[in-house]
Amino acid sequence: MIGTLDSLLRRRLAGRRNMSTSSSDTVTSERSLHGLLLLLATIAGVSVANIYYNQPLLDDFRKSFPQSAAWIGVVPSMTQLGYAAGMLLLAPLGDRFDRRRLILLQIAGMCIALLFAAAAPNLVVLVFASLAIGVLATIAQQAVPFSAELAPPSGRGQAVGTVMSGLLLGILLARTAAGFVGQYFGWRAVFGASIIALIALAAVIISKLPHSKPTSTLAYGKLIGSMWHLVIELRGLREASLTGAALFAAFSLFWSTLALLLAGAPFHYGPQAAGLFGIVGAAGAMAAPLAGKFADRRGPRAIVSLSIALAAISFVVFALSGTSLIGLVIGVIVLDIGVQAAQISNQSRIYALKPEARSRVNTVFMVCYFIGGAAGSAVGAFVWPLFGWVGVSIAGLLFTAAAGFNHMRGRPESMAASGTAE
Image 1 (tube, rainbow, N blue to C red):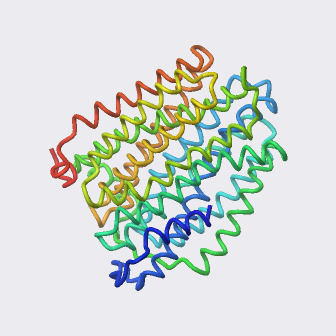
Image 2: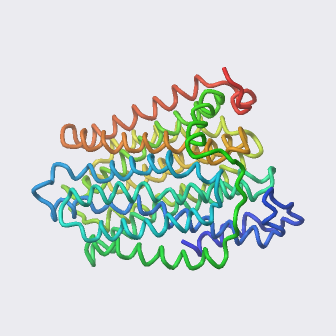
Image 3: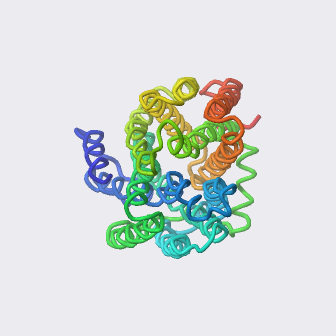
């Protein structure tokens, strides 16, 4: 993943000279910005991957805990709910404290949670460990606002898109890595390997990542409470958050049921096959910097509209491809490009609404986003045994329709992005 990101960053930053310093006075040259964005992208990808390791392993969990097989779908839902809770309780601290220190503390806690998951004797322990993993994986949401702080205003969307490429590669390649390790070494080894990766990453952070400068002196309670005022004040934030939640619900619905589809007839594939679809979905991650660049130049609303249409098309393809690998591959590419481009465009937009509160604005957006993801996973667990793959596809189409309805109700970009209250 690091090699892919390095190549991508060099293409995006080639030819740029005389880059201005950031508000934190940390970045003084193109080369240092390049290195920091690469490191932040890696932090985002390695940390957020922990939320998705369990998705291609669901059939293995079912075999390990047959007495609790009916509740296996709770595992990814609890991880995503944990992520939403961590966003609400931990991510806003980036406005109040040094983000570097917060990242290191969360890595330490994550390693402990992963140990419990690896040693889980029953599904109950695995579920609670998954909840803790979700809470602590919000390390990624310190990295993304950090990139917006470091970049000059004219390149903010592109910088966010670059770091988001790492986050998206982590989401998608997590399934590939977990599927491979789970196939050959067992699902418990997946969590053990993640601990090793996080320890190595922490060593790099200590030596390379600069400190950030807090932008708020609010006490913790007031810091959390101020997010409600941001929701009331910023119409653009509300619109972007609801649209993102609906799209991510559709995204999670698909990925949380794909392993179950592939495990049955006519495929009869193990977790490695489900994980390999993450490589296919990496096309969406490659589109992220381009989406950020177009958001910088033309505004995000048109990109979000196109993204919603792509997501809807993907579920039509899925409905017709319940027995076709080629159809599933095409659908995955279209879905991932649509959902990831919409997320980049929406995040570029909301970071401009309130620069002094980027962590809190990002928190509101991502809490809604992952509540949507948890809802999508829960709907998948309910719909799959009752209505099968066609039911899953219809549910995904309904989520994208909800995203489109909310987006169409929004104001033109010049007003919605301004953050003015209703």
